[in-house]
Length: 327
Image 1 (cartoon, one colour):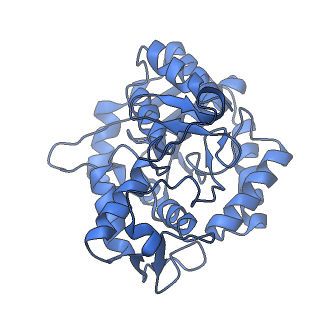
Image 2: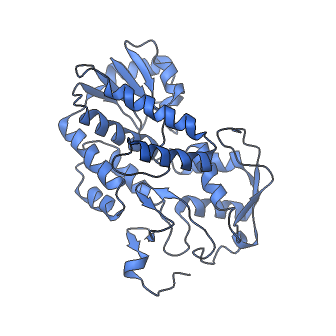
Image 3: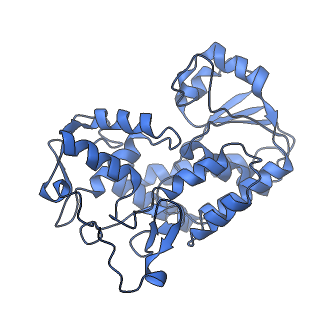
């Protein structure tokens, strides 16, 4: 038996269960993506982006990806695999990827432990909150076999998520039978990371601007606030820091801070953030102020002008030629 989990905290808490533990170290809510990212070109492309945005050494990233992919490919087909993933976007994108890869390798003996709540743990953010004895109880009471229908839903969901055309996600959501109980909501949450048709800011960026409009804030205060408000995202501190860094770039930065934001090499969150004069003018459209170098699933925002109107995606280039989106 092999348990695949999303982090060391969870992995360490199930060490007493039978079988081996594999901590999967990747972020599929971040960086360049396509349907198949196991080839060397895509691994290198992602490695460069992670090094640029998160300061994770490219060589370390590449070696980790190759080691993980090799491990999956060498698992004997009869091995029982248990996937431990909670409800949020971070975990659900990882679950989609892994079910795709395990299916390609013809591994059939698959089970999962997946929850979005736990009695006595409110608010519930993830499995890392639980003690070892609670994790062991989940294993015995909540483990369930993964069906062919669930694998199919993961395969089609991953294809839509990594498409250059994010409208495929909306099509997938409309057709979903929710065989994987939390994937549909995770992909709905994903759509809100596209820039608003009105301001050019996504919903997380808008939350940050509105909070800093009241008072300057520390990074850790902002991070705690956003994780409480958006429990379906599973935003990591490094992801959040990288997103904020994008708002401090270019000739018209919206934010400024007194210390570098945390990254892989310097994870301690010391920064205090405040709005610049551009950020203080929150009613002005940000389309001309923000220089996007960012990926959402298979969409590179610098080139693709997909926008979110709160209910559905709009392609600015195709549907709104010459129209201004300023409020």
